[in-house]
Every structure is written in C-alpha cells, then in structure tokens.
Length: 193
Image (tube, rainbow, N blue to C red; front, top):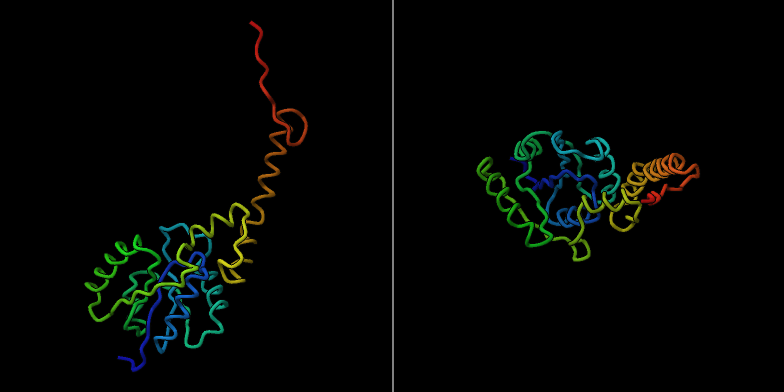
C-alpha cells in the first residue's frame, strides 16, 4: 500500500464547474495526492469527450499542487485501486444529494471494503451549481462566467456558438416560406361564412 494518502475524486464532470474546482482544492488540503477521475460512460450522453474534459480539468487545476487528472471506464473502485487511492471524495451540496450518495457509498464499500468515502461540502456560493444547469444556461446563450473555469467557459461558448445562428437561419427560412419576408409569419385569415 502506498505511503501517501491519496484520494480519488470521481465524476462525469461534463463540464467541470467552479464547485468541482472548490472541492478539488479542499481535498488537496487534506490529502497528499488528489486524482480527479473523469468517468467515460457511453450510456450517458455527454457534451464533451473524456479527452476534452481531462484537458479542461488539467487546465483548471494546474495551479493546485498534488492534483492529477485521469480518465477511466468501468467501476470507480477499480479506478481507485489502480491509482492507489484509499479514499473517494464525494461532494454534498444539499440534503437531496445525501440519499443517492449514501447508497453509492455503501455499494462501493461492499465492492471495496478497504476504500473509504469522504463527503465534502462546497463553499456556500456553489451549493446550487451543477453541470446540467451550466449546460442549459450555455445552450440558451446565457452567461456562465463565474460558474466554470475560464477554459470551460470558452469551450461551452464554442460548442453552442453555432446554435443561435442555426436557429436564426431556420426562422428566416420559415418566414420566407410563410410570407416572403425574413422573420415574417403567416397569419391565417378567418373564412367568410
């Protein structure tokens, strides 16, 4: 068993938020080594590839000492064993997270009794934050500055950049079919009786 205290912080991280970054920093103060493990789950439709997520997380955590980033597929406990981690870090934002995380912790304990689970709470300013909300805001063209690291913000903007242009083009085409003018819509006239 390695002499250093290593903690695995697993997740999909699609995308990595400032809440995830906050938990990574907290874990780095507690453990000799923190491994952020990016899950590859083909059944879960992700916006970014595992390689893209690893690159973004490496960029965001570059200034934090003793943090590594890896990708994995399969059971998280196998990843923890392969990385020499004795602890898994999980974040709890609210009471609603607890039931799911509790079940997962018990199952992981059954699969790997030697690996403990440590629950960390993020800073108060990140308790509402999750990747799904961030993607939805970005998809709708809203600002995500302050919610995600800079590179993630840029990647989200690049990924959704074409969406507004495509939507405008479709609206123009629909308007042209409806009334000949871009943006026009045809209004049905009432029939005479």
